[in-house]
Image (cartoon, rainbow, N blue to C red):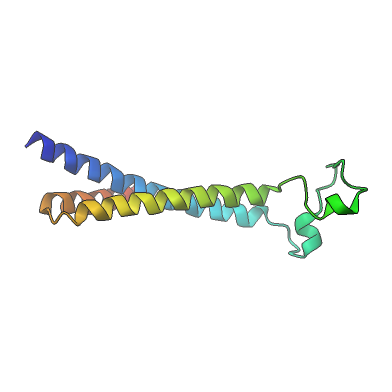
Length: 118
């Protein structure tokens, strides 16, 4: 009985965490869209911002690969990590539900509901 209650609690918490990661990914998407330059031309995406000086500015061979990463790139990296975490958590909850245990299933549903509510 104690093992089952602990299992249901763990699945409930995993479901809450899944919903939290999903919301975190949405927040990062909004921030990434705000960090994008207004002009989506190739020059706007690869040129450094005013005030940024790169040692490779005079060298055309080094200009092909920028030595800096703009802010939107780091938001995209964060979104990617959140996506991987979301997929892993989703598969873990799905695997637990596929045990066909009604209490585990109810824990996953309750955790998803609680996570979305929060």
